[in-house]
Amino acid sequence: MAQQKPHMNLVTIGHVDHGKSTLVGRLLFEHGEIPAHIIEEFKKQAEEKGKATFEFAWVMDRFKEERERGVTIDLAHRKFETDKYYFTLIDAPGHRDFVKNMITGTSQADAAMLVVSARDGDGVMAQTREHAFLSRTLGVQQLIVLINKMDATQPPFSQERYEAVKKDVEKLLASIGYKNVPIIPISGYKGDNILKKSENLKWFNGPTLIQALDELKTPEKPTSKPLRIPVQDVYSITGIGTVPVGRVETGVVKVGDKVIFLPADKQGEVKTIEMHHENMPTAEPGDNIGFNVRGIAKNDIKRGDVCGPVTSPPTVAKSFTAQIVVLNHPSVIAPGYKPVFHVHTTQIACRFDEIVKTLNPKDGTTLKEKPDFIKTGDIAIVKIVPDRPFVIEKVSEFSQLGRFAIRDMGQTVAAGQCIDIETK
Ligand code: GDP
Image (tube, rainbow, N blue to C red; front, side, top):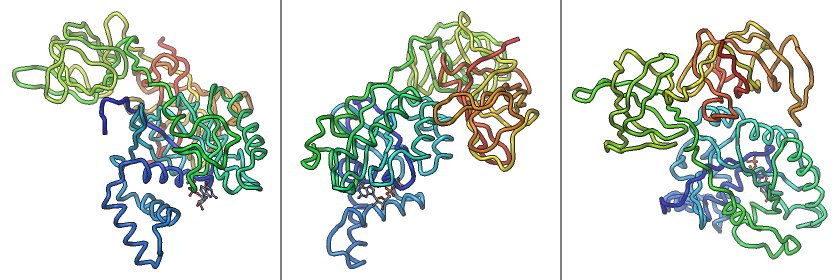
């Protein structure tokens, strides 16, 4: 795979049974990097089961089973290439996992494919709305909508049915603020409009899925923002000195830069920067680096501190306002509730100080001011007070440092983003 092509993380979202895994299977099996031995294995199984031909549908069922067992086709193989990009398909079997992955940044999606079945009785449904809204909330910048199962409309490949579903999709997109979204009729099952223009869909003069993927914008590296490196770990290396380790989220760090670590409030000068055991003069967003800082001892800083320029230091919050989605809470959340927030490399106990209002998940408008409590499924604006001041940023300024997951009793109960900060 050509490494020089820009990389994009792509997530598939949409209502259950609208055809997400079938589509993923089609992309991976036809254009991707599924190792030959796995395809061979599936063929062998097909023969043993008495399937005369190597049917795509049958393969897809196996693929789904494998996927559900979480084996064989790991992330390393969920790749495919277009002319412009190479894509990694992020799995989102359930929306809890999707949210958790998005928040923890392990697989922040650059774009989403929203699958909407056009079969009679399907169309825009509860999870279609929910996933689209969540994607927006979680910062997925670009969207492609696929009107799927066009082979199963009445009559098959009905333009009229496509137009009807498209109208509902457009209403939804307008209400949550996605613009310039391609809405493509496809059949993931039969392969129409995936790679080649479908003979069955001649009335559609927009792009195929692969063309639309190529037309996505290259995600910008936030190099012009101030530097932010959340500290993962701190080492003391003989002959070098104190070496914090972390991923550059925004900005650029250069040898000679004067930096500050907050909330530790320690300053120093960057002497060396190293990545993959090689010294480098600068590092930029996405780089995982170790960097020696003169003037700082190992015990001065720790995991969860954030490094930034002395001239534009990270924000230390005494309290903050957040928009959250309650994903999975056994009872209700009321003011006073104190779970653990996972923000960049920090884990910190925080108290719900006030529930300002709940929002309509369909369009983000206000549902109720100052409710007594919130529960699973609710989206709310809340005021949060951490146990001690820590670094968090507004999602509008540093999206990478403004998102968090809320965990309690070993589970992710909610997820959200910081929309305002009080520093005093
Ligand atoms: P998911 O729950 O969104 O991942 O949906 P699946 O990919 O598991 O598909 C659900 C059902 O719809 C399966 O029985 C698929 O075979 C069927 N399906 C998926 N895509 C298509 C399609 O393009 N046309 C038709 N006719 N059926 C499809």
